Amino acid sequence: MTDKQLIVQVRPDGTVHAETIGMHGNECLDYIAVLENMLDAETTESSFTDAYAQVAEQEETTTQNWDGAR
Image (cartoon, helix red, strand yellow):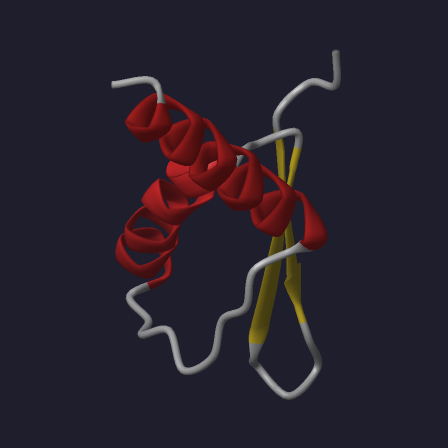
């Protein structure tokens, strides 16, 4: 199991890039507000990683299987 990590880079132009590792699904979204508060900043762009997409796909499949079991 991978430890949960939040990697934050402050670039020379003052922009901030953050990436989560070891977090799944919506768990990573909680850190956006934390970073905004800590940095007194506003998110201008964000995207989901492949890990997020995989978890979302698995959750959708599980939900479909559950609905079909009725």
